[in-house]
Image 1 (tube, helix red, strand yellow):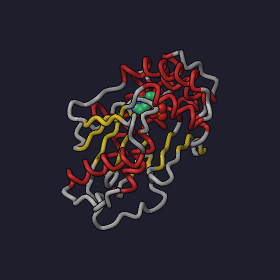
Image 2: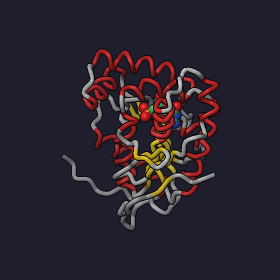
Image 3: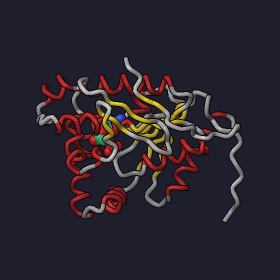
Length: 243
Ligand code: DC
């Protein structure tokens, strides 16, 4: 299978980073918990690459919509799951997503794709295909932070560092609405629907460390993930001045 990840630029790791260690950090949790920002921040701090598995489900959904496929037709979605070439960039400073060579990094974040992606992600053939690609990307990376819904349970259950990032529903919807400039009420409604649809594909590994980000800022969440990874890798935690 084609390995569909690349690192466009050096992540600039220092000698005491976890890069080249093969370390896999799994970050799972519901939408709006802050997984992407926290995973990217942790990957940068640790000198690791970064995999956003949700972007791959979004990319397939974008392509299906672009082809005029009815995404509620599971048989059609299953038949076409492996048709487009989906590639992702794993530089945590500048991740990108491509479908058949075209950059769709922005297009996969629209409300239309966000509303349709859960239906696509529930199709078993879609999951089998994309999980295979995700495992190849992880296996070929010198060390990576991978985020999604099932990384610690299905994609990379052997990952030695697992985080389940959560937040209260209202806080998650509030962040999403502020980021995308959407109304808070409709965002909460859409989020509740997606939570329900994504639940069967989502899991918290028994050995995952749960972080509730409701009252934490991004730096604090990154710091917890970095500390867990450095402890596992036997690296000293950098001194932080107390405020
Ligand atoms: O994290 P996100 O909102 O970009 O994810 C997009 C969709 O893909 C969401 O409906 C959940 C689904 N998804 C999944 O089923 N498994 C993953 N590993 C990642 C995302």
